[in-house]
Amino acid sequence: MSTALAETSERLLALSRRAESLYDDLDLKAVAEWKSRGRSRKAIGFLPIYVPREIIHAAGALPVGLMGGADRVEIVRGDSYFQSYICHLPRSVIELAVGGRMDACDGFLFPSICDVIRNLSGMFKMLLPGKYVHYVDLPQNFDTALGGRFYKSEMKLIARDIGNLTGVEVTDDRLRASLAAYNENRVALRRLLHARRDRPWEVPTLDYYLLLRAGYMLPVEEHTAMVNEYVELAAQAGRPRMDNIRVAVRGAFCEQPPLGLLRTLERAGCYVVDDDFVLGSRFIEQDLDVHGDPWDALAQGFMHHSLPAASKYDQRRTKHADFVKRVRDYRADGVIFMAPSFCDPALLEQPMLQKALEDAGIPFTAFKYSEDTGQFQVIREQAGTFADALKLWGNA
Ligand code: SF4
Image (cartoon, rainbow, N blue to C red; front, side, top):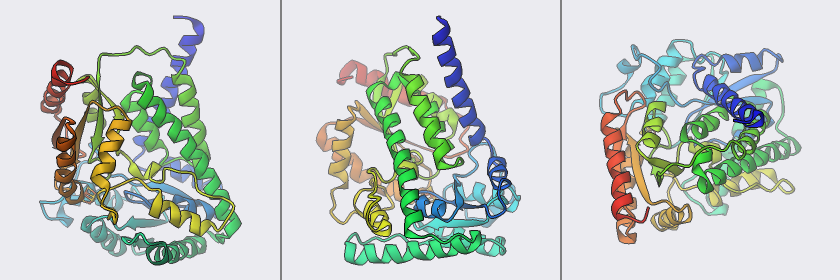
């Protein structure tokens, strides 16, 4: 291996290790460290899927994505707050909160995606009385004059509340600057997504995933630089191309799969070329206008340029056709539905998407997981059989 290639590989390894250390930082030490650099600095935690991070940034605070504890938290108290038949995410979130491991956050936003998250916001209000807790009502009407107006008023309310915490008023100019910072991040993430779509051997699923998660801990400017550097180096690293099939993954937008499951998919012979992991990190696909009314720009982004999600009502009823088109655009040989056990939004949407794939002649397989799943042999066999079947009888 030449010296230049060895240096590239070493730097790539350092980037993925840095991202993994942020993923492992369940005590939010990196957030506490960021806050220690200025007295007015505050951190606002948010639950999946999406909140407009630009507003938090414009108020001088750090948005921190809270995605549960995966397989790294032993649930002791979390179980006692919930019935058996719901997903795992709220248990680990409560466990982390009551254990003081979210103390670095000064406030919390809970987007309206399902009843579990709604109930969780109420619990946070009771369990953490000194903290700012807000349930973000996202519009389910996508008419600009109705849902758009409502959404703008909701965003202005959040901006006022967080501004009161930091002492920084969210002016139009500050918000435009934040839109620009997040636009740069969107550009970087699109580069990463497109590199993986076009040359998936350059961007292993685990690295890709950890980079997305890093964006939920780092200031946006730092994350943008990290992603750009990774994409540039990955193109020069000469990673070998494997005889893998190309799959799109759906259902993993909220409770996240453990890292072991992501490794298993690739070891089973699947390149993930499209997915809905950490969906809020790239929920708005297009750059937002930074010249006009920034509140309008954010509302337009959410209402008309955001990715489809099980928790988002699609007034135009084109979700299934859009999904088939996306699978084709990303040249996926097949689809893996992997949803968290008991996730109503993901599991209720799945039959509609499966029917659309059947009609389009696109193969798929499905299984469920929990964020603390520890056994992957069955999943490896299922994904491996799917990959082999597509190589033998499909178009892969
Ligand atoms: S995993 Fe599903 S059911 Fe659980 S909180 Fe998330 S969206 Fe709701």
